[in-house]
Amino acid sequence: MPNAKGYAAATAKAPLAPYSFERRELREQDVAIDIKFCGICHSDIHQARDEWGGSIFPMVPGHEVAGVVTAVGSKVTKFKVGDKAGIGCMVDSCRKCEQCKEGLEQYCAVGAVWTYNAKDKDGVPTMGGYSDKIVADESFVLRMPDNLPLDASAPLLCAGITLYSPLKHWNAGPGKKVAIVGLGGLGHMGVKLAHALGAEVTVLSQSLRKQADGERLGADHFYATSDPETFKKLERNFDLIINTVSGDMDWNQYLSLLKVDGSMVVVGAPEKPNEVASFALILGRRSLAGSAIGGIEETQEMLDFCGKHNVTSDIELIPIQKVNEAYERVLKSDVRYRFVIDMASLNAN
Ligand code: NAP
Ligand code: ZN
Ligand code: ZN
Image (cartoon, rainbow, N blue to C red; front, top):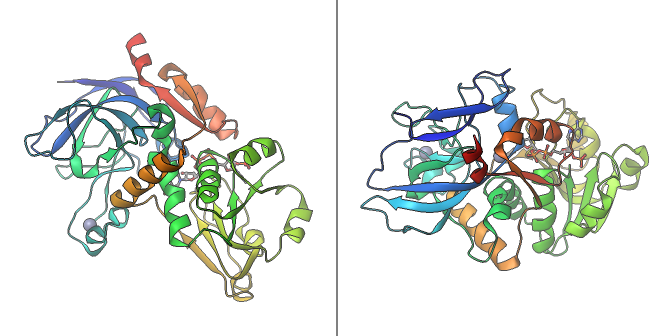
């Protein structure tokens, strides 16, 4: 019996439309959450349009889920009714493999159970946060900072952790020159977080259109990658480049901007593979790496860090009826800097 409502893509070609479905009964360790806000991540679009292959339809996207706890199972210890709570990209994992034991559930050997477009341990397709409620095991539910607004903190659950994790892993901090490529949802969180960590931050954007915003967000420098001079000027300049770009681009050009021993970490996930010239790496002992979100413990650490440093996302709040329009605007890089769905709008359907 459907007990939840939301918006779903029926096929890869279909726009999102109202959809009713069933959330599971509360189990001993489950938390039921009334969803108040859900961010729109570019990954929602990639998956709703089956750009990575293997999408499961119908699909209710959404993995930046923020809300309030409405019920808890008998064995729940972390949450009580009325608490603010969040869910990011994962709702479960094997919990036994080497990675899970280390708190790197996103790299679970068996495969993490993603918040949507996946199957849970019972083989039931998971449904994401573009909906009125969600039920998940408390081990995968996050505590949202009390001092931050819930709407602007929803995007921390994917965009925030996806940048925080590599910034920490590659030691961004005082004395380090960090470049963020692409000033979108992920990129703008990268600027805020790298700045809060004390690094010298440069934005590499396609044009200078977003320069004033970039500087307001905490960037020390801002360059347009459409200007060939940029690549000459910044040769061998950075310790770390985090590449958030969702579309096709030439990575080799960006590798040339790394100092000796510098690293470029790819977090953007375009559909097509990229060609890398060996000399772009060899001549500078450079590294090319990738990174996926962050583990649950690190996600909580990031949320607490954001609470302490007053870091939230710059958002445009929209009713769910505008979700398809918002997708088009994300594709045009026309978002400042994350769309967040106000779930109260579901009642208007
Ligand atoms: P977004 O808001 O659309 O931002 C992407 C930005 O990249 C755009 O704002 C634009 O910035 C730049 N860009 C887009 N197309 C470009 C092109 N062809 N060449 C150069 N620059 C381009 O998307 P997002 O939500 O931040 O997500 C970015 C990517 O990360 C997506 O592929 C998403 O699936 C992926 N992702 C990965 C993870 C992970 O765990 N690794 C997590 C979440 C998302 P400018 O206007 O400044 O140029
Ligand atoms: Zn995401
Ligand atoms: Zn595992």
